[in-house]
Length: 327
Image 1 (cartoon, rainbow, N blue to C red):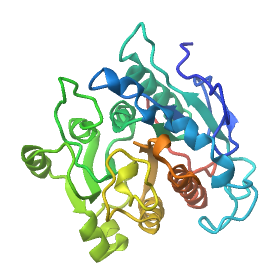
Image 2 (cartoon, one colour):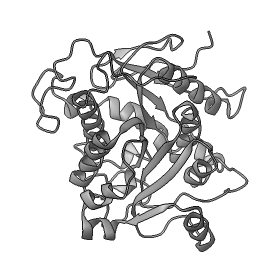
Image 3 (cartoon, helix red, strand yellow):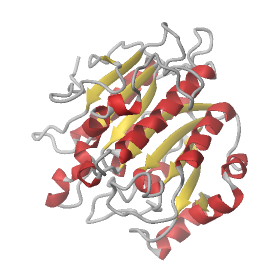
Image 4 (tube, rainbow, N blue to C red):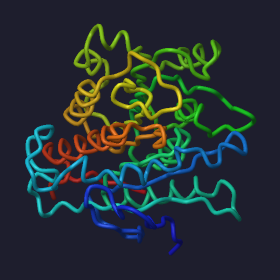
């Protein structure tokens, strides 16, 4: 069996007191954390950007995210795993690059997520920059059709940057090319990123549902959820700069007016109730820019807690109600 992930060497070995499980072949689990620290660099300086430290930085604030897994949590109306001793919650470690095989970590994370889906797990991916969404999302072809729900300040529809087509500016463009991605909804758009007018037109012509942060604040998250088809499979990709920098300041491109925590929580709970959330990633955190109380990483962790608790309460992991994969 090819070794796809590596366990953390320092700090917390797992997120939220989960079980470490790095042997993915035949793994049976309900909820699986996996780190993907490295994307596809645009230049030599990008190889060691601070976002590569984010998966471990989020793990390391475990006891600030959840003081104790058996304590009552008001966000999810119960303990982290809802008192369910039968729920298997694992952390699979990180997919790291092989210097002798540049780019091969994209193949390995796709294969890792395929193993997790085959074992009926809900993968939650810790980035890394937003380029990591591309290989992760490729693994979901057995769950077609998938609706991609994207929270971000930026459009991410560039075809390439410096000849690199699977970097952080292109994940939504690449998703639009995947046959199993049936619909794309983008929430929290504002300010200016790498997108050019022609990228915006391409997204509009594709049929992306683009919702600015200002529209969200005007109409509210319940109205936005009404625009997302019900009964489907949802993959949720959260760029930290999609949220307001007052709660997620540790990003490269902070822009005021972003999605609030309450809105992001409402989105997660709303998607869980509308259909089935089959995966989530959180990307673009730069830990060195975080505040002293690590609020960015704590906020990321609290969004993960909300998905875990809501999905368990919705019956995702009842023994008779598991999702199946043909992969």
